[in-house]
Image 1 (cartoon, one colour):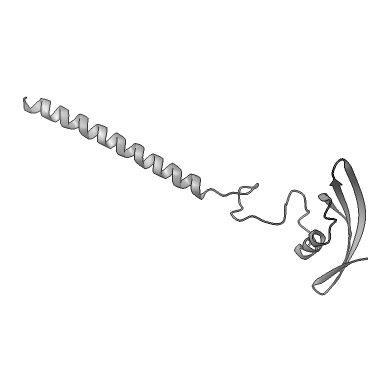
Image 2 (cartoon, helix red, strand yellow):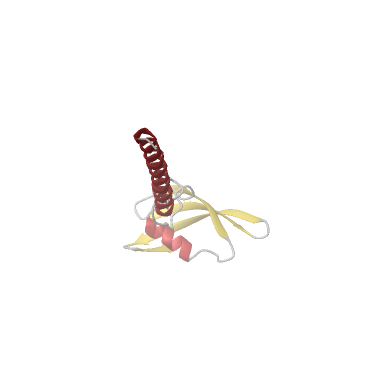
Length: 121
């Protein structure tokens, strides 16, 4: 073998090694990206939230949402909340819900805030 053939063989081996190394880095990089991706529906959340922003208007205080969820009928699911009227401590909400098999309904409910607690009027 002459020197040119040895250089060609080494170059081919080096190119193969370099290509395998790049593939290994791509696989490891893609795996790390996939494991770290934990986005919510809007793409910005990294932790689950109890508030579904596409169902609940953002102006409703979180403490009122918590009160609604704790005191809802366990046999039905809230599907929509609309703000009908708001004063300083009195909120009127139109709450639509559904229950199996095909029961749907809406009702106006009024909530009064006293400090940090809510009650239904």
